[in-house]
Length: 84
Image (tube, rainbow, N blue to C red; front, side):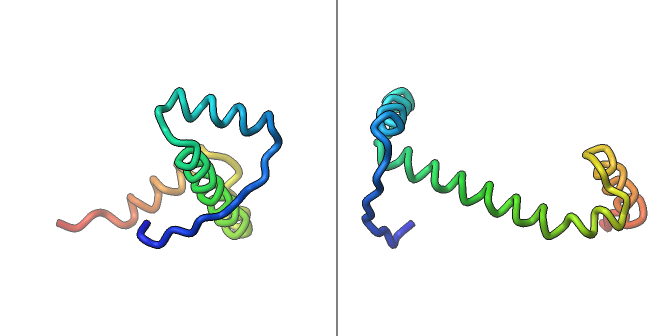
């Protein structure tokens, strides 16, 4: 991450206290902990966005749960064997 930008964030005192405690436990700086938390939030947000976009396709394929996903993946793999 070569391009860094310094920013300021206001947090409730208790949230900051908890973050500082966790950073200390993890031997991280407060900045690194907050950076990690933001990155995790962004990844989670992207995951939920993909789920929302895929939902109509899942419904059309009859996918209702993880078992249905596993069955669909298994069927696709059977119909498209690896080459080589």
